[in-house]
Image 1 (cartoon, one colour):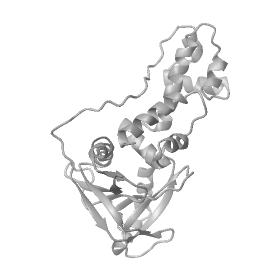
Image 2 (cartoon, helix red, strand yellow):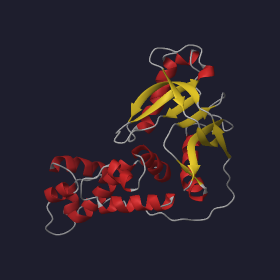
Image 3 (tube, one colour):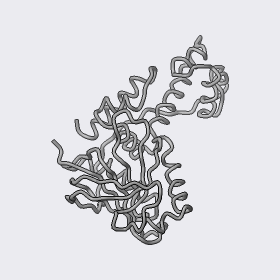
Image 4 (cartoon, rainbow, N blue to C red):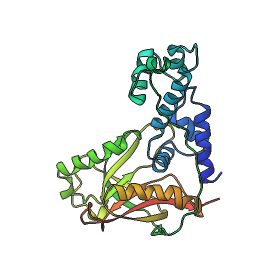
Length: 280
């Protein structure tokens, strides 16, 4: 199953299981990828995390069911995974802007949230600067923290801010943002800030050395201010490069490599490194 087929299959699987207990691990396992890889792929392509997508689809379908004559709010709440009418009403109001009673009585309109569909189109005029390189094993030193995929976009920038406030950058040049390999069943992923060992003056308490195994890497250039340039490049990797490449991403260390300079400048350049192999 190629990349696009896997993503399409994940959307079908979600749709078929909206009325049952559904976890991100279930979906990832169904398409034979890691939990973290699936969540990052989903967010890069769609712009929202998979948990939010599932929740919004359920609340939209729940609203449609409330319009059916004779449907009870508590039955709809239980069908879509809410243990109490109160928790359902809170989530419903947050999404639709009105309560389930108002919708049931047809006093208010519901918020539309249709299912995602993948449409393949051919685009021209854009290029990606990247190279494939083989590297021997190397060492990095990182300060690592665990994150949940649902809120990582908000929490990782706070981690960087705390890194600089603590003065760690005087001893460890903060040129790397690294997602560490995940194990089967992990509900959180580990993200580290640090440097290649040759750029470490002193190892502060809490920092750990990691040995990255030798392998093949795809190195993508990102142009423009952070964090948009990194996010835009991830999206292109998943939507443009992977579907047309003879390579596939494999589990391992994923790197964001930052050069010196003004990270808010239109001319700023950074890199994404991902471990790859030729497709089987």
